[in-house]
Image (tube, rainbow, N blue to C red):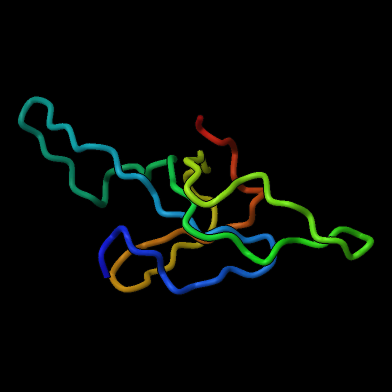
Length: 101
């Protein structure tokens, strides 16, 4: 599966499927940092939205993000899932810190 194709996964409830945006690797002073020592990127792109949360009256609550939005998430937020050799992040919408405009 190419990185630009949408996975055939539909999150449930108020969950959101994200793909982390990798920063360009910079090598300073000839030192290469291994992947295991790099920090996880905090920027991500919204790939898919769940079915939506329900309020106390049973009405659906609209999402504050939409597919294609660029967002900020915590370093250890959500659950990483691997689909067709691509790693995604599955989390609740409330774990998204901000939308980047």
